[in-house]
Length: 229
Image 1 (cartoon, one colour):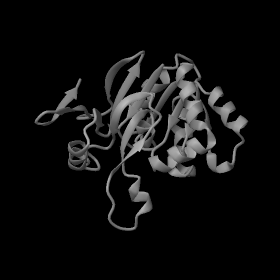
Image 2 (cartoon, rainbow, N blue to C red):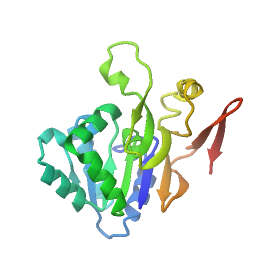
Image 3 (spheres, rainbow, N blue to C red):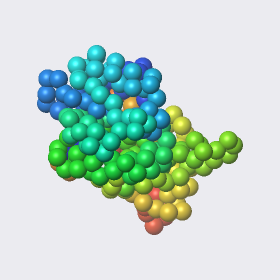
């Protein structure tokens, strides 16, 4: 089992290409079957096209997309998940994505996919979803004015909370405020950084210069931040 959670970056602009190459290699197959789940973006056509371009044409995968907006039957959803060697979850509105997954039973299927040894991965919302919790901007999608970061429950395959986009969206201060009020062990990722969990072991990938992953743990005098190498 491998889970690769990417902190951020534009797939279509090849900003995460080194990480994407690593993901494909984890399948140990010459032409892996790569399933894209773009629920968090509302099944955006441009996002699906970008996945087909990068994972299909560039990295040699057989690609398909699982779009819940197409009113797929439960058996069709299960067949797509079962078909895949690797499953990539795209970014967007984490809370809406998790709600839709639960309504369609996709949450259960992804938990079963982990148990069957598929490569699971994703970026932003697609990184949060594998953890107990995510530090999310989902309130932004429902608000026309002021909004605040919130915690969203994920699938619980990995413990603690994950915060993506630490640098590009300047999440450090609101994250600290949230953790001081309600401490939980957290991994915070900059764009271009990824955590890899394989057979219970955690390692770090740096897809660009100055990409970083931090572990934040509660302490008696506040919070301990440590950069993982």
